[in-house]
Length: 152
Ligand code: CMP
Figure (cartoon, rainbow, N blue to C red):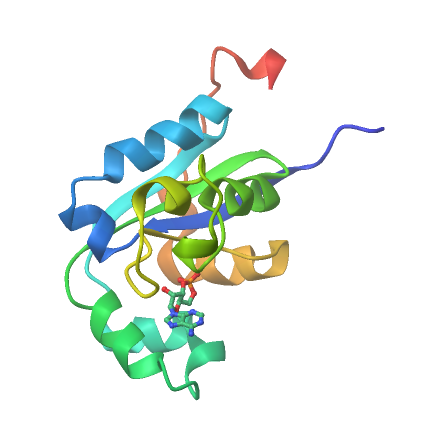
């Protein structure tokens, strides 16, 4: 089979992950897997940004709680790059509902509740492009080579 395409995906450690001191634990997993952090920032999400980001959920009953939570304290937003990055990160994060997430995944190891489920990641390449554009500009991406890239 041909090598998978290098993709860029959007990932965010949510307010619960930040306040629980889990930024390092979460980023460590992605880096150890071979994903490259190409942009990252600590930030507070505004209501306006929350509504854009979670546009598809705006009419859902859980949206008010989600909006309150995601704007409640800072998040750590990042762009990760690597082969099949979108699917790999989703698999590493585990099921959205942490009680269904497999042990070994971020949520399966670190979360129990649905809204504060530690991380968010884009669910497709198209979504990744849309979400990355909400959080980062071209100037935010910092190119470099990992020393282990020949194996990744
Ligand atoms: P996330 O991947 O960031 O996408 C939407 C978020 O809404 C989800 O993770 C959960 O944190 C939150 N959420 C709250 N209730 C629900 C629900 N019933 N179904 C899906 N997501 C929910």
